[in-house]
Image (cartoon, rainbow, N blue to C red; front, side, top):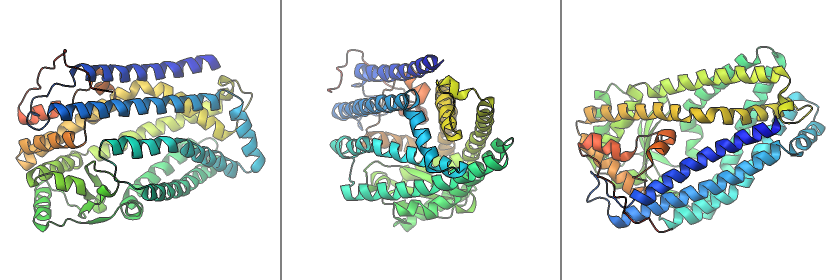
Length: 424
C-alpha cells in the first residue's frame, strides 16, 4: 500500500508538471501576439519581458515543487517520521504538549528550508524584473515578525484543538471545527488592526476629492466602509493591487500606493467598484460558508480515518501518534483534492465575472475597468496567453484578455503560431 500511495502522489505531481509544460509551450508559441484591446499599451518588448518573467517564475516554482515533494516523501516514507515521532514523545508525556511540539517544530523546520527560495525570488527574480524594493534588513524583519506571529497563533490553535480532542474523543471533529470557524472569523475582524499594521503603514488617501468620490460610489451601491486607506506597498514591491479587508462594521478598502500612482481616477473607481461587487454579491460570505462546510466534512473524515486504526499501516508503520496521523491524513487529502482544483477555480472565476459586471454598472464606465486591467497586466508582467486548460485548472480570475474583451467590446487578436519563442 505504501508504494501505491507514493505512485498516486507522483501521478499528481506529473499531472501538475504536464499542466505547467502546456502553459509554457503555449506561451512560447503565441506569446509575441498582442491581444485585442492591448494595442498601444503592450508592445513586442513588453510581451517578451512578460513571457520571460512567466517562464522564470514557472521554473522556480517547478524546482521548489520538486524540492518540497522530495522532502515530504522522504519524511513520510523513510524512518524519519517514526524517529521524529519517537523523539517528540520523549520530550513530553502530555498529549497536548507533544502534539504542539510536533506541529510547531515541523512547521519551523519547513519555514527554514524554504528560506533559499524566498531569498532567490525576492532578491534575484523580482529584482531582475524591476519589482523588488525590499532591503535585506526589511526582509529579515518581516521574516522575524511573521515567524513570531505564526508561532503564537499555531500554539494557540493547536493547543485548543488538542484539548478539545482529549476531552471529547467521539465528537472532537465537531467541536474543533466550531473552534476553527470561530477563530477564523475573529481573525478576519482583528487582522486589519492587529496584524496588518505590523508589516505595512496604512493612512488615509491624500486625495480628499477621490476619497469622497469613492464613498459616494459605495453609498450608491449601499455599502458602508470603515475607511479608505492607502498602504505603503512600494516599500517591498512595485506590484499593485487593491482589496477589501475585514467584515461587518470593520470592513475597509485598501489601495496599494503603487496602484494609486499607476491609475487615472476613473480607473481607480472602476477597480474599487469591482471590489465592491464581491461584497455586494455576497462572494465573501458565500466563500466563507463553502470553506467552512468543506472543513466540517474534512474534520469528520479525519476523525473516521484516525478512529479506523489502520492509517499508520498504509504508510508501513506499526503505530503513530495522533499528530503524526494528522500529517498522514493531510498527505492523503492533498492527493484526493487535486482533481477538485478546477471546481474551486471555476467558482472563483464566476465570482470575478459577476464583480466585473457589477463594476461596469456601478461605475458606468466599463472601458475604465478594461483600461485598468490592461495597465495592471502591463505593470505586473501578467501572462496574456495562458493555456486554456491551465487557466481552467488553476486560474482564480478569468484570463485578463477575456475580461478586457467583454468589458471593452474588442475581440482577442488571433495568435500567430509562427511567433518566435521568448528568450530564456
